[in-house]
Image 1 (cartoon, rainbow over the protein chains, first blue to last red):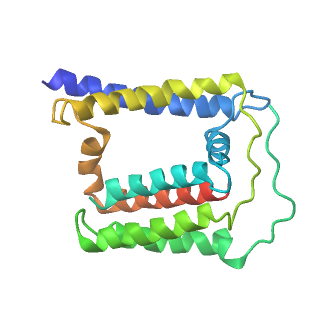
Image 2: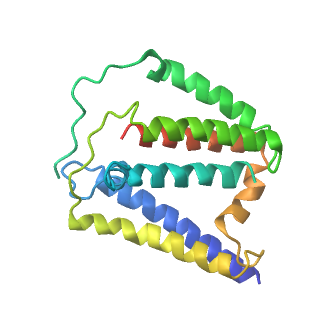
Image 3: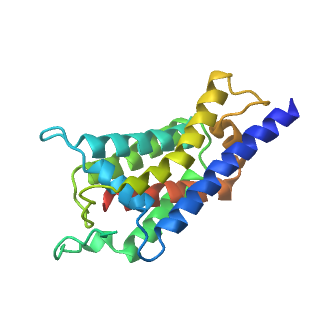
Length: 72
Length: 135
């Protein structure tokens, strides 16, 4: 089903384009929208007591993503 | 919106300078681009570089930017692209990731077979890792 494949690719491209749009809006001067980096920083600041759960989660996910794409 | 400020006078280490990191990352990426998927060497390289960057990130060794104390409601705009990405990825994964409804990694496979693309994406992966470690 070629048309379904095209639709899936179009949806992925739309999601990536939307990421670019929101980041561009966030980087405008006086924008109320935080950038992706600021969002990551906020998520990574989450702690459970002494344990930096946010940092472990984000870095763990990124590490796994690299392994998923480049090693397996 | 109130932007986060840099931490007060972080002592810059020699090895964290761009002049050092860019060639090191480039060299590792050039090696990574030549390693095929499922090979022991590719696994070891990702585990070692990822592990090092994970440790640097979790231990706050190079952290320079103070995080936002809270995020405004408009930050919910980020849900739109990530929600769409997760929705399509989950649907294609549940449908078995075939040629007619491929997951992102299946679509990326032919691209990652090319040496330069693989090296460039590996470089991007490490740079993003480093960027997050600084936050």
